[in-house]
Image (cartoon, rainbow, N blue to C red; front, side, top):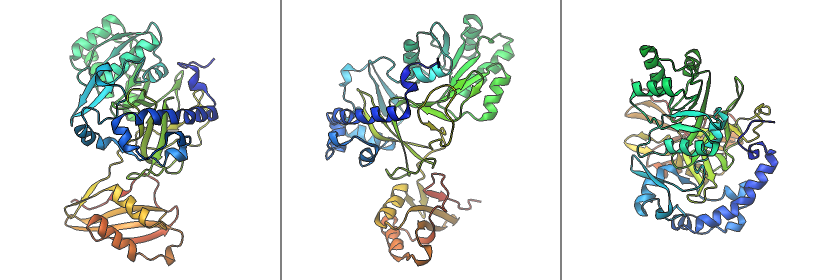
Length: 417
């Protein structure tokens, strides 16, 4: 029997897709009961949203818009369906941006990545995410309560005490950032402390390069997995393993519908192409519908069934930021402006704005994939560029499929030397 938190992770993909789509109308209807979503989805009939194609017609709400939305309607922009007084906790990150937590069991859905990392009932973990204003530590607490393990609420900092707690209390798992675990291990080596009980780690909030992962293996933590989560969404995806073998990519959470869209737009890209992560989350207190994270990723295609038994879609993990806004001749140029050019000119299959030259001598060129590059005319497109960006731009045509599939809509290749 495959070792997963529950049977949802083992569903045939067709069954999962069917059940997620069946839940969509109810989610949209519940969201529309909140003032913010009622405004965003004002022309949407919830009963019609029963497929990915229907979902893709809804507006995208971007993480970058949260600050303005929350100032307009404090504290959560009217996106919460549960009143503030009935929530469990409120969090604050720089901006400020506020995030809610409801009272449901494992509200952040963190039990799945923790279980995949090897956390089990009766185990003991050292929780080194911060408990100060941010939800990461409480994501771990919720997952631990669901699984039935014990938590050392260590937080971050106080490195010598961290080492002392590990050496004397003997936790089997570390949960926190990669950089802080490295600091703890180096401090333990300096102190001559035995922290060999801690053989598993679940990392988040920072990049985890392969060189650092290998360093952990060579320094006594052989089982290291990474998770992808955010303060507004909770768990999005996570790595899995079977024994000592780590599986490719990250598997999606069971309560998330993922879309990968072209940055600056809401248009889904082809499977395997890099784009912006957009999620729809089945959260009864804080439903998020087509919420653009600002992160780049891609669906992992052509991978065999995972030996761990989990059947959900896998993504390549975090591949950078989607916000490619840049400044040209003192004017900001945004991916959404490039998208608007392509919308106005449907002959453009795909576009990439390349900024070249030297500072103060910028050259802005829109490379456009079209069906027949030799017969295409750029005059109308040049005019659209000028109207939308207030800048002069050139146009070059290319064959369909010739532009890189790396998620870049704006590519700044200027010489800054």
